Amino acid sequence: MKKFDISVLSVAPLRQGETMKQGIDTAVLLAKAVDKMGYNRIWFAEHHNHDAYASAATVSIVQHILANTKNIRVGSGGVMLPNHSPLVVAEQFGTLETLYPNRVDLALGRAPGTDQKTADVIRRSNHNGVFFFEREVQDILRFVGEESVQGEVRAYPGVGTNVPVFVLGSSTGSAKIAAKLGLPYAFGAQFTPRAMAETITIYRENFQPSAYLQEPYVIACINVIAADSMEEATFISASHLQVYIDIYTNNLSQLIPPTKNFLESLSQVELEILHQRLGYTIMGDAETIRRDLIEFQQTYQVDEIIVISNIYESKKEIHSYEILKQVVDELFE
Image (cartoon, rainbow, N blue to C red; front, side, top):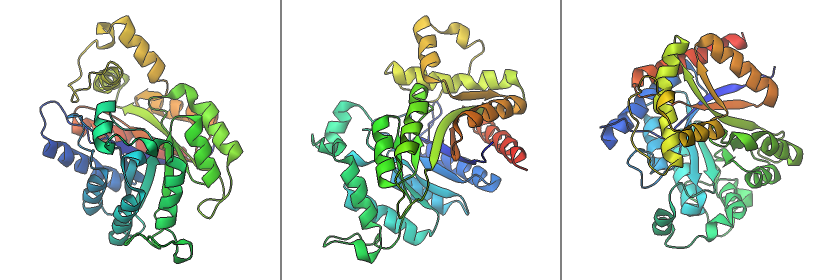
Protein backbone atom coordinates (compact mmCIF):
# COMPACT_ATOMS: atom_id res chain seq x y z
CA MET A 1 0.00 0.00 0.00
CA LYS A 2 1.30 3.43 -0.96
CA LYS A 3 2.23 5.63 2.00
CA PHE A 4 0.19 8.81 2.36
CA ASP A 5 0.38 12.02 4.39
CA ILE A 6 -2.51 13.00 6.63
CA SER A 7 -3.95 16.52 6.97
CA VAL A 8 -6.97 18.48 8.20
CA LEU A 9 -9.66 20.59 6.50
CA SER A 10 -11.82 23.00 8.50
CA VAL A 11 -14.49 25.59 7.81
CA ALA A 12 -14.11 27.01 11.34
CA PRO A 13 -17.67 25.89 12.16
CA LEU A 14 -19.69 27.52 14.90
CA ARG A 15 -21.30 25.27 17.47
CA GLN A 16 -24.88 26.11 18.35
CA GLY A 17 -24.95 29.39 20.28
CA GLU A 18 -21.29 30.28 19.68
CA THR A 19 -20.16 33.74 18.62
CA MET A 20 -17.83 34.21 15.65
CA LYS A 21 -14.97 34.86 18.09
CA GLN A 22 -15.68 31.59 19.88
CA GLY A 23 -15.76 29.73 16.57
CA ILE A 24 -12.37 31.13 15.62
CA ASP A 25 -10.97 30.32 19.06
CA THR A 26 -12.15 26.72 18.70
CA ALA A 27 -10.45 26.52 15.30
CA VAL A 28 -7.22 27.69 16.95
CA LEU A 29 -7.53 24.95 19.58
CA LEU A 30 -7.94 22.35 16.84
CA ALA A 31 -4.99 23.70 14.87
CA LYS A 32 -2.73 23.71 17.92
CA ALA A 33 -3.75 20.14 18.74
CA VAL A 34 -3.16 18.70 15.27
CA ASP A 35 0.10 20.64 15.05
CA LYS A 36 1.36 18.83 18.15
CA MET A 37 0.11 15.50 16.79
CA GLY A 38 2.23 15.92 13.66
CA TYR A 39 -0.41 16.42 10.97
CA ASN A 40 1.03 17.65 7.68
CA ARG A 41 -1.22 20.66 7.05
CA ILE A 42 -4.48 22.34 8.00
CA TRP A 43 -6.55 24.18 5.40
CA PHE A 44 -9.50 26.52 5.81
CA ALA A 45 -12.30 26.81 3.26
CA GLU A 46 -13.88 30.01 1.96
CA HIS A 47 -17.63 30.34 2.54
CA HIS A 48 -19.73 33.50 2.51
CA ASN A 49 -23.05 34.67 3.98
CA HIS A 50 -23.33 31.78 6.45
CA ASP A 51 -23.47 32.37 10.20
CA ALA A 52 -22.45 28.72 10.58
CA TYR A 53 -18.84 29.34 9.47
CA ALA A 54 -16.14 31.78 10.57
CA SER A 55 -13.83 31.22 7.60
CA ALA A 56 -15.11 33.77 5.06
CA ALA A 57 -11.93 35.89 5.22
CA THR A 58 -9.71 32.89 4.58
CA VAL A 59 -6.41 34.75 4.44
CA SER A 60 -7.10 36.31 7.86
CA ILE A 61 -7.89 32.92 9.40
CA VAL A 62 -4.74 31.44 7.85
CA GLN A 63 -2.60 34.24 9.29
CA HIS A 64 -4.15 33.82 12.75
CA ILE A 65 -3.58 30.07 12.72
CA LEU A 66 0.02 30.50 11.53
CA ALA A 67 0.64 32.87 14.44
CA ASN A 68 -0.72 30.32 16.93
CA THR A 69 1.05 27.17 15.67
CA LYS A 70 4.66 26.13 15.23
CA ASN A 71 5.25 23.49 12.57
CA ILE A 72 2.10 22.56 10.67
CA ARG A 73 1.57 23.97 7.18
CA VAL A 74 -1.45 26.27 7.00
CA GLY A 75 -3.37 27.33 3.95
CA SER A 76 -6.55 28.03 2.08
CA GLY A 77 -8.63 25.07 1.11
CA GLY A 78 -9.38 27.07 -0.78
CA VAL A 79 -9.48 30.60 -1.99
CA MET A 80 -12.35 30.77 -4.49
CA LEU A 81 -10.41 32.59 -7.17
CA PRO A 82 -13.35 34.07 -9.16
CA ASN A 83 -14.16 36.11 -6.03
CA HIS A 84 -10.72 37.73 -5.93
CA SER A 85 -8.07 39.60 -7.88
CA PRO A 86 -5.16 37.24 -8.66
CA LEU A 87 -2.70 40.05 -7.92
CA VAL A 88 -4.19 40.70 -4.48
CA VAL A 89 -4.24 36.98 -3.67
CA ALA A 90 -0.57 36.74 -4.63
CA GLU A 91 0.25 39.77 -2.47
CA GLN A 92 -1.65 38.34 0.49
CA PHE A 93 -0.09 34.90 0.37
CA GLY A 94 3.29 36.32 -0.60
CA THR A 95 3.10 38.36 2.60
CA LEU A 96 2.20 35.26 4.63
CA GLU A 97 5.08 33.30 3.09
CA THR A 98 7.44 36.17 3.92
CA LEU A 99 6.29 36.15 7.55
CA TYR A 100 6.05 32.35 7.92
CA PRO A 101 8.56 30.79 5.49
CA ASN A 102 7.86 27.27 4.20
CA ARG A 103 4.57 26.97 6.10
CA VAL A 104 2.02 28.48 3.69
CA ASP A 105 -0.19 26.74 1.10
CA LEU A 106 -2.43 28.35 -1.51
CA ALA A 107 -5.17 26.06 -2.78
CA LEU A 108 -7.43 27.60 -5.43
CA GLY A 109 -10.98 26.75 -6.42
CA ARG A 110 -13.38 28.13 -9.01
CA ALA A 111 -16.70 27.63 -7.19
CA PRO A 112 -18.45 30.66 -5.66
CA GLY A 113 -18.41 29.38 -2.08
CA THR A 114 -21.86 30.83 -1.58
CA ASP A 115 -25.30 31.39 -3.13
CA GLN A 116 -25.91 33.33 -6.35
CA LYS A 117 -27.10 36.56 -4.71
CA THR A 118 -24.05 36.71 -2.46
CA ALA A 119 -21.78 35.92 -5.39
CA ASP A 120 -23.31 38.89 -7.24
CA VAL A 121 -22.43 41.17 -4.32
CA ILE A 122 -18.89 39.82 -4.02
CA ARG A 123 -18.18 39.99 -7.73
CA ARG A 124 -20.36 43.04 -8.46
CA SER A 125 -22.16 40.91 -11.06
CA ASN A 126 -18.91 40.18 -12.90
CA HIS A 127 -18.80 36.38 -13.18
CA ASN A 128 -16.19 36.13 -15.91
CA GLY A 129 -13.62 34.84 -13.42
CA VAL A 130 -15.24 31.42 -13.53
CA PHE A 131 -14.36 31.14 -17.21
CA PHE A 132 -10.84 32.50 -16.78
CA PHE A 133 -9.86 30.26 -13.87
CA GLU A 134 -6.96 28.58 -15.68
CA ARG A 135 -5.50 31.88 -16.82
CA GLU A 136 -5.85 33.41 -13.36
CA VAL A 137 -4.10 30.44 -11.74
CA GLN A 138 -1.27 31.03 -14.21
CA ASP A 139 -1.25 34.71 -13.23
CA ILE A 140 -0.80 33.79 -9.57
CA LEU A 141 1.96 31.33 -10.41
CA ARG A 142 3.77 34.13 -12.21
CA PHE A 143 3.19 36.70 -9.45
CA VAL A 144 4.76 34.42 -6.80
CA GLY A 145 7.39 33.07 -9.19
CA GLU A 146 10.99 34.06 -9.79
CA GLU A 147 12.17 37.41 -11.14
CA SER A 148 12.75 35.91 -14.58
CA VAL A 149 9.02 35.25 -15.21
CA GLN A 150 7.68 38.61 -14.05
CA GLY A 151 5.89 41.13 -16.24
CA GLU A 152 5.31 44.83 -15.81
CA VAL A 153 2.79 44.35 -12.97
CA ARG A 154 4.28 42.55 -9.97
CA ALA A 155 3.20 41.36 -6.54
CA TYR A 156 5.11 42.81 -3.60
CA PRO A 157 5.46 40.80 -1.40
CA GLY A 158 5.03 37.87 -3.75
CA VAL A 159 7.85 37.82 -6.28
CA GLY A 160 10.23 34.99 -5.49
CA THR A 161 8.19 33.56 -2.62
CA ASN A 162 7.15 30.52 -4.68
CA VAL A 163 4.12 29.84 -2.51
CA PRO A 164 2.98 26.25 -3.24
CA VAL A 165 -0.19 26.35 -5.35
CA PHE A 166 -2.80 23.57 -5.46
CA VAL A 167 -5.93 23.21 -7.59
CA LEU A 168 -9.13 22.22 -5.80
CA GLY A 169 -12.03 20.56 -7.50
CA SER A 170 -14.72 17.95 -7.72
CA SER A 171 -14.99 17.60 -11.49
CA THR A 172 -13.00 16.51 -14.51
CA GLY A 173 -12.63 20.13 -15.64
CA SER A 174 -10.59 21.16 -12.61
CA ALA A 175 -8.57 17.94 -12.87
CA LYS A 176 -7.62 18.76 -16.46
CA ILE A 177 -6.48 22.25 -15.47
CA ALA A 178 -4.33 20.89 -12.62
CA ALA A 179 -2.84 18.29 -14.96
CA LYS A 180 -2.12 20.79 -17.74
CA LEU A 181 -0.39 23.21 -15.36
CA GLY A 182 1.54 20.47 -13.58
CA LEU A 183 0.06 21.28 -10.17
CA PRO A 184 -1.08 19.08 -7.27
CA TYR A 185 -4.80 18.31 -7.30
CA ALA A 186 -7.10 18.13 -4.28
CA PHE A 187 -10.41 16.35 -4.87
CA GLY A 188 -13.44 17.05 -2.67
CA ALA A 189 -14.58 13.48 -2.10
CA GLN A 190 -16.25 14.52 1.15
CA PHE A 191 -19.31 15.66 -0.82
CA THR A 192 -18.88 14.35 -4.40
CA PRO A 193 -17.72 10.76 -3.97
CA ARG A 194 -19.07 9.27 -7.19
CA ALA A 195 -16.85 11.33 -9.50
CA MET A 196 -13.60 10.60 -7.70
CA ALA A 197 -12.30 7.57 -9.60
CA GLU A 198 -12.87 9.11 -13.03
CA THR A 199 -11.54 12.51 -12.01
CA ILE A 200 -8.25 11.43 -10.48
CA THR A 201 -7.66 9.04 -13.38
CA ILE A 202 -8.05 11.93 -15.83
CA TYR A 203 -5.68 14.03 -13.74
CA ARG A 204 -3.02 11.33 -13.65
CA GLU A 205 -3.31 10.41 -17.33
CA ASN A 206 -3.11 14.03 -18.50
CA PHE A 207 -0.49 15.28 -16.04
CA GLN A 208 2.33 17.32 -17.56
CA PRO A 209 5.52 17.63 -15.48
CA SER A 210 6.32 21.22 -14.60
CA ALA A 211 8.71 23.39 -12.64
CA TYR A 212 6.34 22.91 -9.71
CA LEU A 213 5.84 19.15 -9.78
CA GLN A 214 7.41 16.27 -11.67
CA GLU A 215 4.77 13.62 -10.94
CA PRO A 216 1.02 13.76 -10.23
CA TYR A 217 0.11 14.50 -6.62
CA VAL A 218 -3.42 13.63 -5.51
CA ILE A 219 -5.01 14.80 -2.28
CA ALA A 220 -8.39 13.29 -1.38
CA CYS A 221 -10.65 15.00 1.14
CA ILE A 222 -12.84 12.57 3.07
CA ASN A 223 -15.04 12.59 6.17
CA VAL A 224 -13.67 10.80 9.24
CA ILE A 225 -15.37 10.43 12.62
CA ALA A 226 -13.34 8.39 15.12
CA ALA A 227 -14.10 7.48 18.72
CA ASP A 228 -13.21 4.86 21.32
CA SER A 229 -16.17 2.70 20.33
CA MET A 230 -18.40 2.23 17.31
CA GLU A 231 -21.38 3.24 19.44
CA GLU A 232 -19.76 6.55 20.40
CA ALA A 233 -18.65 7.26 16.83
CA THR A 234 -22.17 6.64 15.55
CA PHE A 235 -23.58 8.98 18.17
CA ILE A 236 -21.20 11.92 17.64
CA SER A 237 -21.45 11.60 13.85
CA ALA A 238 -25.02 12.91 13.98
CA SER A 239 -23.79 16.51 14.03
CA HIS A 240 -21.63 15.89 10.97
CA LEU A 241 -24.42 14.16 9.06
CA GLN A 242 -26.85 16.97 9.86
CA VAL A 243 -24.44 19.46 8.25
CA TYR A 244 -24.70 17.67 4.91
CA ILE A 245 -28.46 17.38 5.12
CA ASP A 246 -28.65 21.11 5.83
CA ILE A 247 -26.38 21.94 2.88
CA TYR A 248 -28.43 20.00 0.37
CA THR A 249 -31.79 21.16 1.72
CA ASN A 250 -30.58 24.79 1.68
CA ASN A 251 -31.05 25.10 5.43
CA LEU A 252 -27.53 25.57 6.74
CA SER A 253 -27.31 26.09 10.49
CA GLN A 254 -24.69 26.08 13.21
CA LEU A 255 -23.33 22.73 14.36
CA ILE A 256 -25.92 21.09 16.60
CA PRO A 257 -25.47 18.61 19.45
CA PRO A 258 -25.82 14.96 18.43
CA THR A 259 -28.98 13.06 19.25
CA LYS A 260 -29.62 9.38 19.85
CA ASN A 261 -31.21 7.33 17.09
CA PHE A 262 -30.45 10.12 14.63
CA LEU A 263 -30.69 8.02 11.47
CA GLU A 264 -34.05 6.60 12.51
CA SER A 265 -35.44 10.14 12.75
CA LEU A 266 -34.60 11.04 9.14
CA SER A 267 -36.96 11.10 6.19
CA GLN A 268 -36.37 9.00 3.09
CA VAL A 269 -35.21 12.11 1.22
CA GLU A 270 -32.67 12.92 3.93
CA LEU A 271 -31.39 9.35 3.98
CA GLU A 272 -30.96 9.47 0.21
CA ILE A 273 -28.92 12.68 0.52
CA LEU A 274 -26.56 10.94 2.93
CA HIS A 275 -26.37 7.87 0.73
CA GLN A 276 -25.44 9.89 -2.35
CA ARG A 277 -23.12 12.43 -0.75
CA LEU A 278 -21.26 10.59 2.00
CA GLY A 279 -19.75 7.68 0.13
CA TYR A 280 -16.30 8.46 1.49
CA THR A 281 -17.12 8.72 5.16
CA ILE A 282 -15.07 6.61 7.54
CA MET A 283 -16.61 6.25 10.97
CA GLY A 284 -15.93 4.04 13.96
CA ASP A 285 -13.35 2.88 16.46
CA ALA A 286 -9.64 2.64 15.71
CA GLU A 287 -9.85 -0.82 14.16
CA THR A 288 -12.70 0.20 11.86
CA ILE A 289 -10.87 3.36 10.85
CA ARG A 290 -7.76 1.30 10.09
CA ARG A 291 -9.68 -1.24 7.97
CA ASP A 292 -11.55 1.39 5.95
CA LEU A 293 -8.48 3.56 5.41
CA ILE A 294 -6.58 0.58 4.03
CA GLU A 295 -9.46 -0.26 1.69
CA PHE A 296 -9.67 3.35 0.51
CA GLN A 297 -5.94 3.65 -0.10
CA GLN A 298 -5.64 0.30 -1.84
CA THR A 299 -8.34 1.48 -4.24
CA TYR A 300 -7.13 5.02 -4.99
CA GLN A 301 -3.42 5.14 -4.07
CA VAL A 302 -3.54 8.84 -3.20
CA ASP A 303 -0.55 10.83 -2.00
CA GLU A 304 -2.36 12.55 0.84
CA ILE A 305 -5.66 12.34 2.69
CA ILE A 306 -7.14 15.51 4.13
CA VAL A 307 -9.89 14.97 6.65
CA ILE A 308 -12.91 16.97 7.76
CA SER A 309 -14.71 16.06 10.99
CA ASN A 310 -17.68 18.15 12.12
CA ILE A 311 -17.98 17.01 15.74
CA TYR A 312 -19.97 19.11 18.19
CA GLU A 313 -17.73 18.83 21.25
CA SER A 314 -14.28 20.27 20.60
CA LYS A 315 -12.60 17.74 22.91
CA LYS A 316 -14.19 14.84 21.06
CA GLU A 317 -13.22 16.37 17.71
CA ILE A 318 -9.59 16.58 18.86
CA HIS A 319 -9.76 13.02 20.18
CA SER A 320 -11.06 11.86 16.80
CA TYR A 321 -7.96 13.32 15.18
CA GLU A 322 -5.78 11.67 17.83
CA ILE A 323 -7.22 8.26 17.01
CA LEU A 324 -6.83 8.84 13.27
CA LYS A 325 -3.22 9.99 13.57
CA GLN A 326 -2.30 7.00 15.70
CA VAL A 327 -3.91 4.64 13.20
CA VAL A 328 -2.01 6.20 10.28
CA ASP A 329 1.29 6.19 12.18
CA GLU A 330 0.87 2.51 13.01
CA LEU A 331 0.12 1.68 9.38
CA PHE A 332 3.55 2.89 8.32
CA GLU A 333 5.76 1.97 11.28
